[in-house]
Length: 120
Image 1 (cartoon, helix red, strand yellow):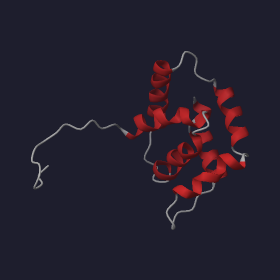
Image 2: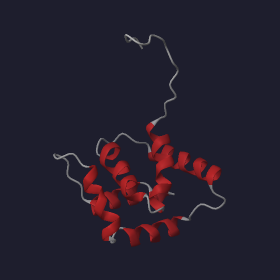
Image 3: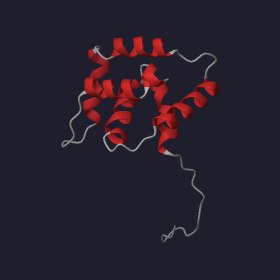
Image 4: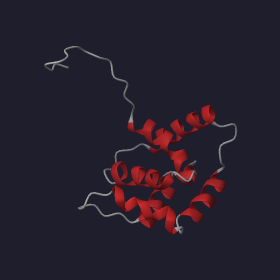
């Protein structure tokens, strides 16, 4: 980095996409999931740039670290099925979109469910 005020170098920690998505997957189960579904679906999935196996591996390692008992696949699916029909849950996602982007939460959920949750 070189500016008028500072010149130097720094190490920056980065993560693979699958690591970021694996640690964001638990948000689908919590009430903070509105933007998680959006993040998991809209960018990487539309660009088909993720490895589901690596996401699941990262999810499992993350969950082993942060909780005593992660939700089962059935619990996860039941939780999401209730949320995907909740207007409050669905309402805020459009605020995250650029004007040219379209987003259908039902389509997003089906993709995330089929490609990720059902494989947990």
